[in-house]
Amino acid sequence: QGVMLNVHCLEKNLDRTLDLVTSTVCGSLFGNNIHHLEALLGTTANSAINSVSSDALSYGRKWGLAPFGEEHALQELLSGLTQVELTLKIAELATQDRLKELVPTLQALAKTIFRPENMRVCVVAGGNRTYIQNSFEGFATRFADMVGEKTNDPLPSLPFNPAGDLFERKFDTTYIPIDIPVHSCHLALETGVTYDHPDSAAMTVLSQMLSSLFLHREIREKGGAYGASAGHLQSGILQMSSYYDPNTLETLKAYGNGVDWLCRGEFSSRDVDEAIISVFGSVDAPKSPSSKGTSEFLHGLLPEDRQRYRDRFFELNRDILVEAANKRLSKYNNLGDEAWIDFNGESNNGSVCVIGSRESCPDKNKLGNWTVKKTL
Image (cartoon, rainbow, N blue to C red; front, side):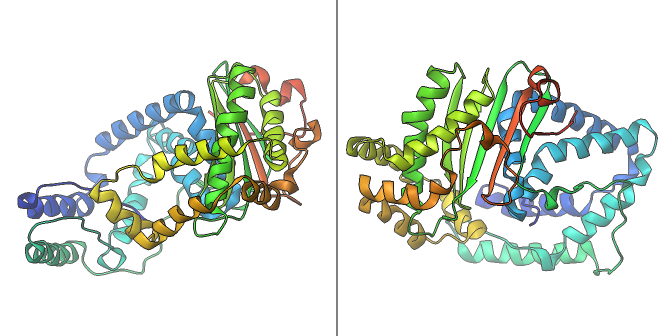
């Protein structure tokens, strides 16, 4: 958890860049220009509202993943629909001439977050190592001088709870009605296979085949959606999504049928080989120097971890994949039945989120045991 600042510069401009970082994070005097803050919030709120309809796919995914743990709940809080709602609530304070109530909270947050003891720095560079090290030592000294002594004063509270009950959310089936004529349908299923698990490569290839051989045919070609995809996250979650989709229940049933399709092994050895080649397109894609450095800094992934993950693909064959599918996904068999939409999280950890047309909202059509999230 933290705030990340990313900067790129030529080596000769390093000192000036670090000075700019220091003045940016230490010199935010929110109370000096309320009108500027008001305009900034208004622009941010308008942008957030417009982004929901244009990027419903991303917002639906984040909401659907939120019950799977603190990491995903934080992503929803900081960049999902919860953040959009928070932005609108804060912008509303400006319309009520209550923006000054927010200033002490913003100032206290800045003083709490931007502390030398909270700082971690990653530098990806060539050139003169001694010069770079001296520059950062000087930066650390100047930064500490500007922020001053640490205080233990409690943070002022907002006039509302930004997170609500987000971190206590159970696995569920959610419909989010917004003003668009189509839908984005999302299903997430817990597999327990993280990046360093022996079955991680197998789940990656299974999700690739599910996406290209089954979902594309059933949801795009037959269902008329603009697209559909599946992927296996490093946190151990199989995720399926559709976008610009005219259907809802039909798509969700196709997701369940896709899980059954994997467990039955209705794919050939050639399909496996083609999926592995496709996956290697991303595994072996050229990486910029900065991404090579930051993957270890942010995620703790060492080069040997990535090599071990890569090597696992060479051990795969059809029988191993069918075994992995049944070991990790057989508990979700028969999700294609209509009753499957009643996820309650008491047995299997899965989450459904559909974001789309208000006309399809289960409030009106009484389809299943849905939770309807009123928003915007």
